Structures are given as C-alpha cells and as structure tokens.
Length: 441
Image 1 (spheres, one colour):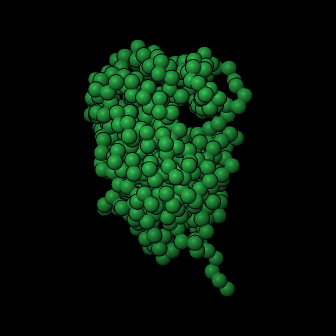
Image 2: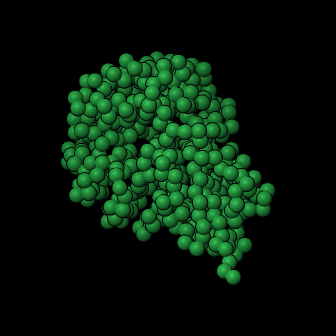
Image 3: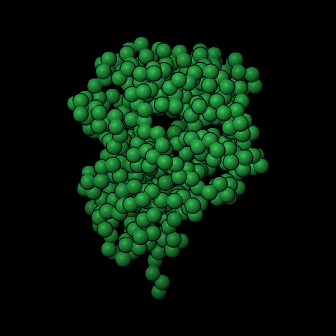
C-alpha cells in the first residue's frame, strides 16, 4: 500500500484579527505561494493567509511552516506553540526570526535566518528524514535566476483583489533607518532575469502588482524591463521613487509599459528628517514638481509618509496632509514611526532609552511604542488619526478627484477602498459609512 503524501501547512499569521468576516484583501503574501512552488509535488501543500481565513489549530498536518514580521510574531508564536503541543514540527522564518533568531527559536523546532529559497529543499528533506536542525541559515544572498512560478492555484483567489503579485528584484542600496529591507535582503539589488519575469507574467491573466521595494532603483535595468513589458499590453502598479521624474526616458517607458500607479516613499517634508533617516534621494528634490511630472505622464502616486520623526513637531500633521492634498495624491499612507528590531532607528531609540513598549503586536505603524522628541505619544496618535480623517474625508476626496480629467471614477474607487481599509483599522473613526468601501488589505 502506497504511503500517504506528507501534509505541509504554510501559514502567514495576521497582524491582529484579520478580515475573516468578509471583504477583500489587496494581495496575498508572495512568500506563501513561492515556497509552495519550490515544494515537490509529492508533498500535499495547503496555504493559509490569516488575513483572509483563520488557522485551524486542530488541522491535520505533518509539518508546519510559518513566516512572520514583527507585528505578527506574537500570533505566529501562538500558532507554533499549538501545533508543537500536538507533536507537529514547526519551521519558522521571515523578517522577525531573521533579526531575532534566539527569540523565535523558543517557539519553533527550526528557524530560517535570511531567505528561505536556498535551504528550503534541505529543510523538507530533513523533515522527511526526521533530522531537522534547529537553525538553517543562508550564508550568502542567493541569485534569483531559476525561481519557480508561485503556486497561485493554492490561494483563495476570491478573497483578494488580485493574486498577480510578481517580484523582479530584491535588496536595496539605501539604508533608511526605519526600514528592514537592506538589513534582511542586502544593500545591493539582485535581479531576476527579465526573460523569466516576462514568462511568469505571460502565464497570468489581468493586471500585475510588482512587489520590488524600488522597481526604478537601477534605471537602466528598469528601462530594459519596461521595454519588455510594452508588448504584453498589461496594466501594473509598483513601488518606486520620485527621482524617476528627472529621467524622461524612464518615465515615458514606465507609462508606455502600462504603469498605472507608483507607491512612493515621500516620508517627510523636512530636510532635517530626510537626512536623519538616510532618505538621501529625496534631498534636494522638488518633490511637488516631481509628483507633477509623474502625474503628467499618466501615472498616479500613492504617497507614504512617516509621522513622529525627531524633526517633527505637532504642526507636521497638518503640513503633511496639506502637501498630499495640494499635489492630489490618489492615496496616502500615514505611518507612525515604528522602531522595528534590526533597524538603525531601533538601535538609536534603544540606546537613548526611548522605547517604551516591546509588545511586538503593537508594532503596526499605528501605535506609538517610543517617546517622540517634540510631542507626546498621545499627540502623535491623535496626529495620525487627524491625517487619515482629513485626507479621506469626503471633501478631500472630491477635491483630489474632480479636478483630474478622465480619472474621476478610478480615483474615487481607490479613495473609497483606502478609506474602508483605514476605517477597518480604526484610523477613520467618526467618518460616515459609505456603501462599497469594504475592501481590506
């Protein structure tokens, strides 16, 4: 009689309570289907993203793999402990276990430090042979050539706005003090071969979301990628930087290749803050003018701002929202400065004795876990709520959408979606309810 295939459960825990009751999440975490794609077909794989469904702690499984960030670490530990109590081996990886391996080791049979792809097959072989080691570490940053296509067929497609998330590069040469990317993925770009990226995109239907941290970070490579995308006639969104506005060829190719919007880290309007956090490519740049050029090319900007930096005072909230409204950003994220472990800002605030909360579940970018320099924690919390309430108020939405010819409806839908997201996270309390704004991330 043939032996049953081993059952592997790969889990991405929710930051908080998830959205199990309804609504759609923007995109799935790419790590789940990618690891599934690297798993031999003689293993029965199931994926659970707790943003769309809760993990059944009594589920049948032979092996469990969990990936987590700081905010989801407490939930990851809870899940891991429950499966281990049943005698099921647990492997844990992701950003948080990479920067705090000893802490994570207390809740897992094995942890992965760094990127999992180079060691994944070995881990599966060791699980099958019951010789799992307590730690697997990727000594070097791996080459990205030859990655398999993610197993999107294992995702609950109906619960996402799209499952077409694609990565073309990892790493970042910048070292923004609040960001974990360069600490975890290295300070140089590593690129997938463009031919492999194009092959993966051809296998998909519909638009694409590129999850590279900065898809235009190496302009010449970005131009080659965009030229290869043009014949596919797709629409896509990605993450980039405002300096792309100063390269007319790059901007033109991005628009012609189907770019609809870029998520851009504006971070702060203060040069003092930009210098302090290492956001050098925004220094000396006329950010308003750059946004205007990008808009003129037909590409929308979703702006990301960090509130509570040491150069901020209580007036920073109104100035930041006014800037976002004046330049008609299609959407914006206003994040409270969060000292994630492994980042320079964590080291700085720790050395200054300013971190007051070490409950990782509070590291959501919407709770204040440190002592701000020129305001109180309460002022920072209230300032973030003000920013979201003001920017996603009906008057603001209309001011930013009605004046953009031909783009009123898509801009309105984007704003209502973000409004729903932020209301769900408790950041837009007091706003009237709007039908159709139930999208979740």
